[in-house]
Length: 307
Length: 250
Image (cartoon, rainbow over all chains, first blue to last red; front, side, top):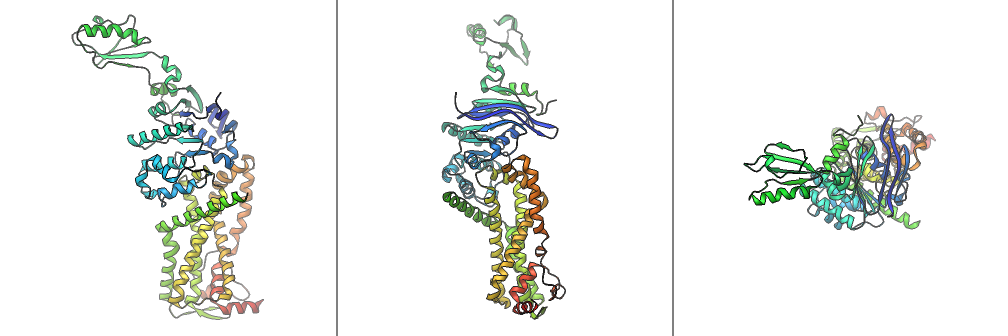
């Protein structure tokens, strides 16, 4: 079994009568990109901050890189990098000055120029932090998180406020960190991001993990029925089409939809029929439930609190 | 161990430099630390040119008396207002959280505030004298300088402690900073210790505000020695006669 970067057993965190984290078990092997998903208030940030050593746990066992984060040993902090959800930066220093300042606290920091290049802030290297846009500030946050060349990086909603191209660059950065065998714990509200980046994800609700696994297989997603959909060919009624027996057809706005667990077998006669009749099955799609569908189902479309 | 200390000292030096740079680049902080004392000096001297202030043992020129008071004001802004607003702002904006996520020790961060504020305050005071000596004929008495420095340093230390002890800030910082180092069961005890440590400093008479009221009303008498750092500094720096008077008194 791969060496673990994070091991959590029975983690609980209470604020008076409110239980923000209600018994979480979690393991993250070294080199894995792990995504923590959940609605606001589900307990994601609380868990991340406990793992970072920023908060005390109420109960449970936590081991991060073989350290107890609560003890906040310097050797531990030298090996982690954090990108907090809201982290201030000295506003009147320049990008280069801030990165160099924070990197100096680490024993083996990355060169400042390399960090700036990694996050794509080359043009802003001499700009003061207060002049950066929201997305540029977030990139600076990421730069500060990786400046010390950490083994484990906590990315708490790292791409919030990014435009699409900045988000792509951030993803590429995560890919590069993954290639360097860094372990990454990522929280995000973007399912596409989790799908694209994470090796495994966990969905939280009400302080508990309600599902865990690879994004493509979360909650049996890979085994769920595929949905076939296409525009009904003009001049043909549905019962004239070679549709599989026993399926429940849905018709809406001229489209036909049905679910099947054997899409290849069920589509074959339909495609052959279209070819024989020289017809195009317009708008033909075969989809399985997206990560977002599964996520919404698991979280019941609610906020993080149990109802 | 030596290596570690050198590393820490180098880090401290970097953070002090950054702290001073931040002050210089923050218009409001730079104005109230460097420009405002100079404005006060010019305005007060313009309105009271030629007048004298009575102090124990004789009279001194207005500029001679008030320049050190204004210098102490500059130190106060540097060592009291800056940490209060700066650290509170740092917590508010999440800067403390970020710092705590790095290997930087809490003591280095806090000391950078202390040293940075002290150096900034001293620079402000120095700037004031650089202007006041040639422009308003303020005299310096080298043999009294060590005593004035001690007074100034004591004032800075007290004001910095006071700045840190602003109650909510201390509770917040102890809770967030030191608390994590010593573990939850001892956090409350740490808060209590911090309060015990800091309170006497706040109550020290030497940190009351520099008096800008009429010199005749604020001047100390022989039987009632000066209690504020501002006045102490004023008298120590400005009045050779005060030293003689005090010697007689003792």
